[in-house]
Image 1 (cartoon, rainbow, N blue to C red):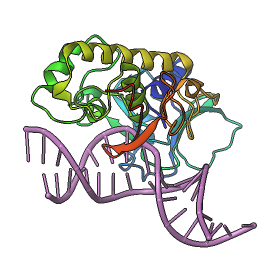
Image 2 (cartoon, rainbow, N blue to C red):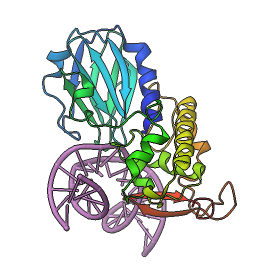
Image 3 (cartoon, helix red, strand yellow):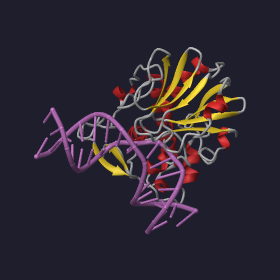
Image 4 (spheres, rainbow, N blue to C red):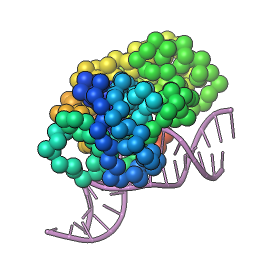
Length: 270
DNA sequence: AAATTCTCCTGAAGGC
DNA sequence: TGCCTTCAGGAGAATT
């Protein structure tokens, strides 16, 4: 399931291959994704050169002179470069043809999207109201402290809410809270500035580690060139129900918090 | 306004 | 072997 590190890895993987290259053709085989794939993509993109590839939250943005593609991988999506000789696979829904290869959008569960915008992407409704990027200085303890005053939501929910900070999905929320010793059910207004500082530091650290590892390998994700990432080996609590806590040895618990399976150590996280 | 629930979808995994 | 049920999950939309 692609989280921010996987999206970042995907961006970096395709960027070096497609920037400066022209699109020959676009084929849409399944337009019914989370939202309908923008109609007329071929006419919009025919012979258009890729200017840049970058990421905002978990959106992959491919910029052209007259607008941008907005791609989201949902929870089972991937973007793969494949040689012309490689035939299309099941669930390859959208295909961007370049001179020597295809860029294929693959998404079995179809929670992702492929949209076109002629606006500045950051002003698109999907992105206009997002919080700061977690790996920038604007994600910091003072921000979380300020946003959390007089709120009674749980910290797990709080850091997964894109209005507060983007890109921290279920896996990284669990891991960040474990490393910070904060219980996922802890109410946000009770957390001190100092503890927020610790949480911010750990969230950045775990995301950066994951990016360096090339993204977490879980069920559906592979890197853009098809090789797997290796971060799953370093997860400390996610998916470890009943396994010993890496810090204290007591059993890892799991329960549903804000609709998501949450893994934590009841002894180490307070 | 804020918190909670619903929704889209397929494939893997488990039970029998 | 195979059918059925359950679960996973990003995040906007709908509801409370």
